[in-house]
Length: 436
Image (cartoon, rainbow, N blue to C red):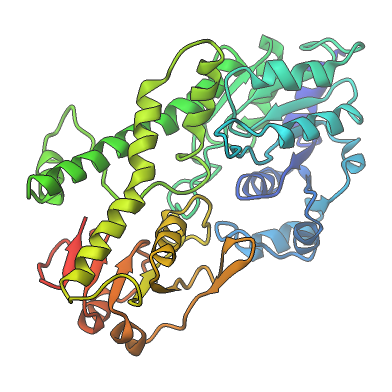
């Protein structure tokens, strides 16, 4: 029996041992889904604290209840390790490591490279290796493939390599790993067949594409689409402000068109790991081919300028009270990058707070999901306990993240002036509420 048929048989019988490298907001939900599908799963992470928590049956990801982890640990379907050597017996390995940008906006491939090098030391014939981390088109074939096959293995015969972009949406209670279609592209048809079989065991629908590069491009198109359209509507907000038009009214009316239009909404800027970051992977790759991705660059320019626009609105709100920014108390409500999550990566709140502090404002924040906020290496803020008095003492309250736990009526009653960047007060008009 060939390696592919042996692997397919193990997958069908749920005898395949599955490993997930990187137990963050992508890797842990994937590991749990594979384990609940009947596989024995070992999660690997260099963070020893995460490993300890998982093995204790605890979850540090809001989207994965601790009860699910505990049940899988107790049934010995899931375990965690900080050592790559413990993955030697794995039949399939999914790589879900971070892919940040450097300060120069170039891709930081160090996590993927280290994972590939470590897996290369333990790989054996019959293994399936799938990269899930978002990256530039060509990564799987340029980095993963040569590292894994070495001089002694043939791809598609001895070892199987594919790319399947993660599609995790933190805080989304409707779509999870199981019911979000999974795109898969293998180096060879046999690679695709093996990867498709694995993911079909844990995901309701698998979409095959012709190559890893096509699959990598799918992910970048998805998030570039969002980044460009958000950039467009953010610029629309800037233009409507200059024309003294309510941009929210315009969007609401445009959204009544039943075809050819999809509503996007302005905000204080982009946050999270995906939308502010992923399009730059594509832009960087195209620069190596002497092509300028103009839409991406322009959208990024507009979106990264939005915190400055928020500062202008705060300044306007304080000027109406005959106050300067310097010395004023400004309370930020919500610092996570989106509602009902604890993730502050690339959150526009970080820029808004830093800009206010640079201008001499006395800045505090309240976010029930984020007790501590690291601004710089030596600056850490603590979430202030919520109270009516906290609102009353602020010269300006700024809504940056519209968590569902906030009592908007109470906030409106107790605030002198509110800068509402999320349009939570869409159904009411008041002189003390300033929208984007």
